[in-house]
Length: 177
Image 1 (cartoon, rainbow, N blue to C red):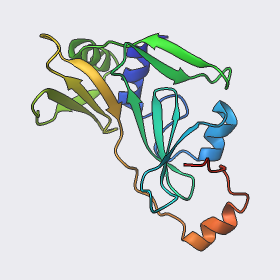
Image 2: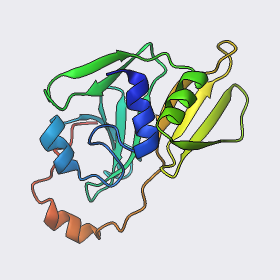
Image 3: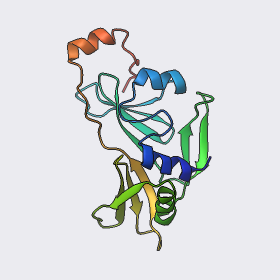
Image 4: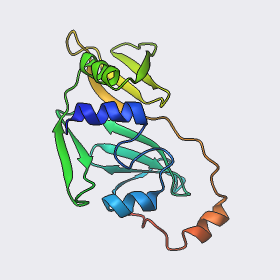
């Protein structure tokens, strides 16, 4: 397995292994174990929360649905969750370029569009999955991948009282912030 293969598959399917917008947190935890609890998105509200499995970050709604998935690729390696061993991570070299990523997407038949560049960055969005790949342009002639991720997944969230009844066990337990 190569980081490029994982990220190209993410672009074409919207999934990193079992992680995808719309996934249920209990299902993910059942296969990968408990993620690292990074914390609340908004300090005034318990939900949504940000969790991670290594360099794969996921935002989870109060109804325990994954609403977005992001893979941080700005380090020299990327750490991915292992389906085979929930307590282990897969570490892969990950200094990928625009040319490598677009070539891998093309090899999968994944369409993409360029997004409007901003200073120091360029980006593309895959179609129809809408996974965005952001590249740093200040690091040489071929931009280097910085992050790949999905936008928030829209869903009908349960009302707070239904959530309280559905997750009376307080799953997952909240870590002290």
